[in-house]
Length: 524
Image (cartoon, rainbow, N blue to C red; front, side, top):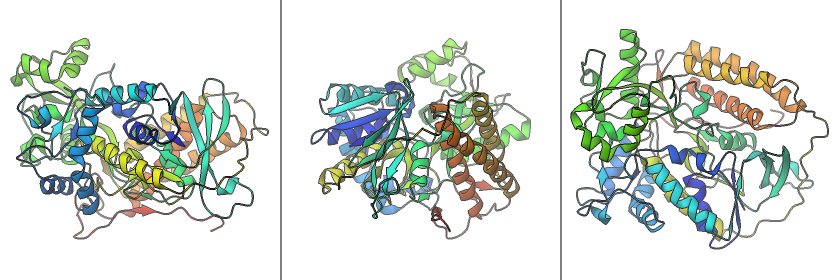
């Protein structure tokens, strides 16, 4: 079987399935470049005596602004302690507290009623990813293919005399050689992360180009809630660092958001102040920046003390110090940035998509957990819990029917003569999405965006049809596909809710439902 993506979701599935069968894992860049490694805050674990499943479900629902699926939230909350225990058993070096549950130090983040976030200082994702990647490298049943990118899924429409819809494998590009190989697989798992790179400013790594969402959509799967793109309130504002996140845990420990004169402003927007959910904090910062004509606001942690900051936030302290910012003596310049894709490929709680043989786990998916806004540190938890249930479902699935898969055909294409077309369209798409489909939206902006996306899609499709594929071309193709899904979803929601705020529809409807898009059948 093939797992596309080598982050926490993909490695969880691979390690669990490798106990029973060989697994191939594709990583389109270096193995250490997954979005998981960029996660700072931590992973939710309902572990403390002051905590409960009900409390975690309630906090998840509150953050999700009425669109969280309660069954999904409860399913994941009930398995959160087991997920953290599994990671501990895999060697993840979480921050310790001898008096804490499981001997772990738990922190608190915005939207959480209690301390329930297990973390490894302020580099939790890196600690988790390093531990699981080491396990995968050492496992005889796991083959890691670095710098291999999925081009598209091989489905029944590629297979002669195959009437029943099914995923049979994947066309994959060896980036270094330029060769496209057909990988047959009884089961394919999409764990490619989100689509943050569709925006000009993002906390995401370069891998976040919506590959899994776009491939699943092209294969006929439904997608849900794509209008809900979470903008993290506090990304470092610095010309040399456009993607460095300042973790929510810093506000959880007491850091304040201020204007240039030191005035705190969050009380005017929400009684929870800096601990309000991310959508509220991001809109508040956006409002204050526009009101006062600012390029950024300040996050002030000086009162927490140098010793505390060095112990609990060493990564942030060190990175800022390299840029000449002493966070113990100076406030940190911050700005909102695209951070997390709350929607994606529609799946059940075992990772099944609409296409038999195709599964998806992690940020690539819409499971109902995040609703209209993700609660902090629920993302890593979802990867582990549903990674386990997906692996179990695949292990128990009946053998897939064999099929003869056609090789990749590039007999009618040639090498591209000008790559500038790709880079120009990439820049135009990201700037347009930032200006028209950002934190605050209007119908006119969305319609303008959709018109330009249609033109870009035509140019990119023509380029794809005539030239050999490259990683840059494939990523651009996937980004523009996802951009259209985001805009069409946003246009269909006639209210403001969670991460989607429209000036034309500022009210929140008393009853609302997820946005689910269905791909039109061919010829319709």
